[in-house]
Image 1: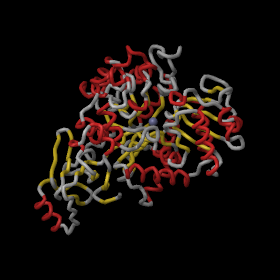
Image 2: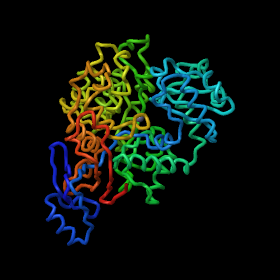
Image 3: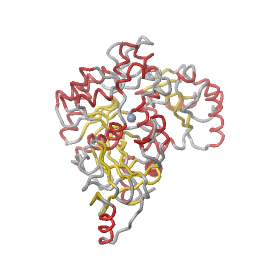
Image 4: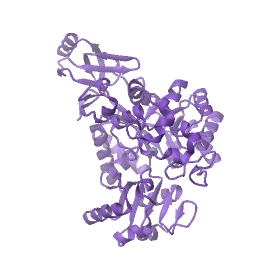
Amino acid sequence: MNGKIYISFKPLKTTEAIVIGNEKVLYTGNSEKARKIAEELEGEVVDLKGKIALPGFIDSHIHLNSLGQSLKMLNLKGTKSIEELKEKLKDYANKTNTSWILGFGWDQEELGRYPTKKDLDEIVNSKPVLLYRTCFHAAVLNTKAMEMVSLEEGEDADLETGIIKENALEKVREIINETLTVEDYKHFLEEGAKFVLSQGVTSVGFVSVNKKSLRALLELDNEGKLPIRVFVYLNPSLLEELKGLGLTRGVGSKRVKIMGIKVLADGSLGARTAWLSKPYEDAPTTGHPNISREELKKIVQEAHRLGLQMAIHGIGDKTTDMILGIYDELGGERNRIEHASILREDQIKRMKRLGVVASVQPRFVISDWWVVKRVGKRRAKWVYPFKSMLEEGVMIGFGTDSPIEPANPWESIYAAVTRGKFEGIETYNYTKGECLSLEESLHSYTYGSACIMHAEDELGTLEEGKFGDFIIVDRDPFEAKEEELRDIKVLEVYVAGSKNH
Ligand SMILES: [Zn+2]
């Protein structure tokens, strides 16, 4: 009571008090009435003393295990030169005793060039080293690591430099994951979940879930150690088993729900592995799909037959053509496209017509500051067209793809509202019209995300009957300046009416 509580953002509705009982919102309205109800129920009364509360954020696309794992990895974000990368690797190697040395976050655009096997060998040659590019769609390996994974030279693996991408990287990831136990995964997931909770995220769409991850997640849930709600999108390799078990969308507990299947259909713009209909502006390549149309269609068919939702990673417009073609052919409800980074106007219209929904990552607009150089000026207006999607009536939810982007929702809200205006990013000049309002951004990060995960009846606003998942923040976002949005701090987090953070 005595707060300013945002019930929803579209329409913008506030109240001064809220009563939560049996995990759900029972009443919203004035403080005196709320106190009376609470006293009758012998509940606890919290005086907000004018503080601001909002519905909990819902991150619709997150790699929870990788996030948990990355909290201990070498973090190379913001590294400005190869020398600096070497320094950081040296410090990290000296104080870690894991069998593999893992790092992430470098960007060749910031470093001046790609790092190489030789660079890493100079620092570490007795242990395998793998450093992911910031997008996790490319990595550099040292000689020791190259020997251990025995890759063949090909489109995705350059043995000379130690740079590997996409399918070759996927293979290496599997080799490393083999060495991890369910206990390791439990640890990563618990750490990841605690971390996102501390950022004000109360539900997540957990994508690219493998068998060990699912098992670990279910164990954590059974042990009551899962502080957030998790909507699960499994790897397609698990389809056979799902079929055998008859598992369908919605199966699970209060905290964990099986949703569907997530497939990677192409790569990233940064690594030039996203599949474009015309070549990149700054290299003679169009990128390539990670999966054939036939294979992808088979997965979608199988998933639909089992009553599972589809979520397909599509960054380049050519990939999105392939995905939309399959969705068009096979139908289905709220089929998801992940990222949808380069979208032509005709594709946005087609998404609306097919009822296809998108999980978008506004923070990419800032991380991909070089994107105009990649796609050229003519295509620049198609980059991350959030406003166009909303205006066309396409349902969008926000996500961070964390650990690729920071899990802090205010970073993404800031990026959606400002699109690089304050960083002097070229993208802003070409796509000013795609800036979202604060209402639209907050709505997309709460109700929008709930919608694309079929959860809008229970989550996404604080209307009566929905789960009491909310956060308390240090200032009213609607009274903050645009450039201050990223500085908003989350003070407390409640899930189902219980204070968790
Ligand atoms: Zn992802």
